[in-house]
Image (tube, rainbow, N blue to C red; front, top):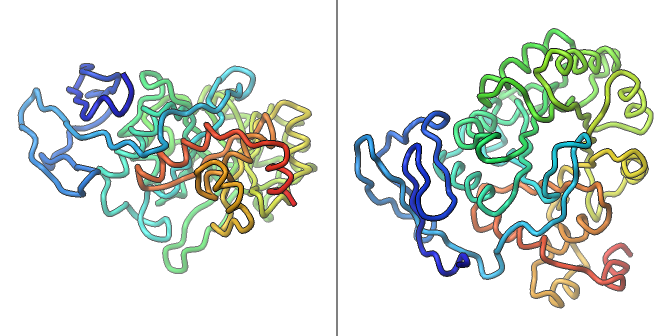
Amino acid sequence: MGLRDVPYYEASIGAKVGRTVRVHGLRRPERASGRASNPEDGEWRPIPPGPERRFRRPIVASPVATENRSDTFDIGGELTVNRLGFGAMRLTGEEIIGPPEDEEGAKDVLERARDLGVDFVDTADSYGPAVSERLIGETLDPVEDDVVIATKGGLWRDDRDGSWPSCGQPGYLRNAILGSLDRLGTETIDLYQFHRPDPDVEYTDSIAAFAEFKDEGKVEHVGVSNVSVDQLEEAREVVEIATVQNQYNIGDRDSEEVLEYCENHDIGFIPWAPLGSGELEGLEEVAENHDASSYQIGLAWLLQHSPVMLPIPGTSSVEHLEENVAASEISLSDEEIETIEN
């Protein structure tokens, strides 16, 4: 039975009903509003109150959405994920500060990602701040949902100007990870990443804090972000590095050398801003060949460009999520790749 054959699904707290959609009463508090959203028409409709309360909503399938068909990568050699992941930065308010206007809608996006086979979710304590992690903790169970959750520490937010100051002091990082553990509702974070080097703190001192977190069982794997090859090598002298997260997309390949290093050492490469600023010029012809959008072609190119690439396109829309996941079905020819890269 395919998506188009299933107009609705239901799930009861603590039970499985219909499709393999799970709602975990121990992890997610009941939705106190007594209403459920309809992503098809944007309207709200009542749902019955009481202990056997059920959530009912239509599955709205995009004309091209099916499931995550990207191949897999083993983070740290052991956490197997589909390479097309999800970036949860946009599940917040404007300017990535505060909660989103529709928290239930944000949770819907996370649930839909899980149902489509997106089993790698990336966030950070600075998204909100704290909001994105909290929503993930209230919606997904890493064990029951078989999802790898990655988060980051090392940046804080200033709501006066929207800036992202860095702080790599070991004491600050320890406080940061305690907050992340609490919001995500876990004793061990699958992948904890140092968000950005702090120019006022010795880089290896910051990385040493992450090594301590791993030794203490707070972290399963360590990643770094916004680094050069030299910084990556420095970090690897302190602790095993499972992933690197740098800006990378068709229009910005400044981290190509870092990507090649990751390929040579079986380190996952997570491109942030995988679609750049949204200006993907010159892709129209290739997109037309596949009855796809330029954005989808950009994601397909990333997936084919390197076997260690783990794109994490983000969105606050179920529709856009489905379009992004559909990109995993696109196979580009050598001629098309040459057109894109040149």
